[in-house]
Image (cartoon, rainbow over all chains, first blue to last red; front, top):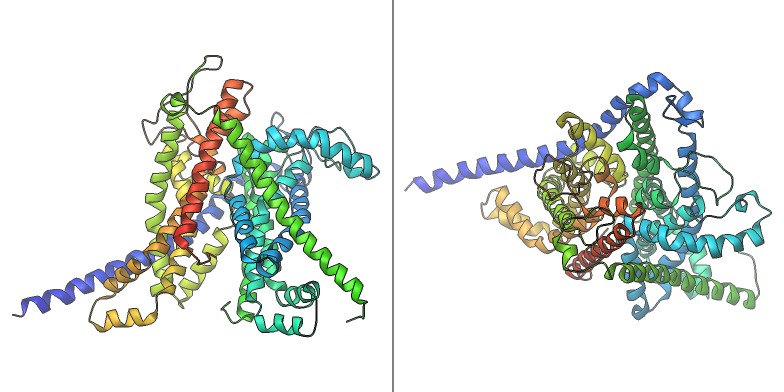
Length: 315
Length: 281
């Protein structure tokens, strides 16, 4: 008679113990993963740091033969392409988020929303293929001559037009981060209480006035978070950029010029690097990218969290 | 607020609406442009040999990417087997054990940050922990890199989906005298649609990834034989072949692009249908 109740609590106890242990170790493992990334990058870049020191961050040379490496061209390329991407994608994604959450009736919002979502789902390498074979020639023959004709007095739009370079990479990056930013911005807009919006419309404000005076002000923290999210993505994007940036260690004011970025340098040269210092310099580039994107991502998470807390946690 | 004429206000408003429409149009035009390019250029490469043969040397007609298709499938399945249980358990920890515990809060933050770490960095990480000690590029390292990318997605969906389960359910299970692991099992069953969706999204995210495989699985012209050897896969093949000067190889790269795009889009659409009206974060 006593057998059943006796066995049952023991099994329950062991099962609970097991589950708790497993879940806790999984949680710790994920934390270790993060720490492991940092440790590994620091450890493997020590050689480059010993050899090059701070010179690594300021010099433009990238010469595997003499063992002199400088991160500046890669850093410049990463920053320029990201900047182009943000300048183009921020207004577009704001407008799309607005259209989807405020302006469009459901029959329009559903297909547009789906299209934007699919744009996010297309793998980076496909953007690269399309960019290299279709978009870069289009840029070279149509867009870049046009820009040079009308804006050629600026140093950014001078020089030979190959279609491969900062501008093309930046535009493709803009396309890639647009869906992520507009998805988050849409959520931010939807978090703004309907009462506040209706109050705006109630006093006769137009859609623009409600957007500008209510939505943007109410959601500014969340919108900043969204921009940081896009920024982080653009910084770390690899394949699409590698296909179209040209992979030359060069700093040029002209946006038509070929260049390189941290990610494309890594993707291109890592498996070919035979010298230990070369390999180590590449890993130091990776460490640089990791630290920058870590800071950006932390800022994004904090801004979004602050926004949520202000909205009471619930949409 | 400054006073403006009715007409200015009206036109500003119209301008905004026109710009919103234009933005949506930009998105749709580029989406269609990319999809049509991939379909038109890729369709001519797809035939039976594409799926059954391994690549021929340049200049030799025929040949396919059967080895890379199999390799990508293997890598994806292995990554799912490694990443999903880990992510699921960490998600259970977040929602059921450590919701307000400092460890839980730290984990939640780290997972959010991990979502935004560039995939190429994950490639470097696995290269250092697996490729260097094992002495060479391997399919195993590739699968681990993809699994690392899956984990944060799975953790977040698991936590979100378990939290949707009402606390009254938890209480009634415990009130019946059931142990906590039974409670978790019942919660998981209740949230299975959402969990499946999360897994599908994570699979969609990794099946198009290239950067993390460059330093881990690399690529290979042969059929996959061992997990400890470089493994053929579609995405790195696209990268290598697209950059090659041979038209045959470029054609194969377009075929592979079509295949990858279709699979990823199909996975995304299917998971959306599963998800129904609920919005993922």
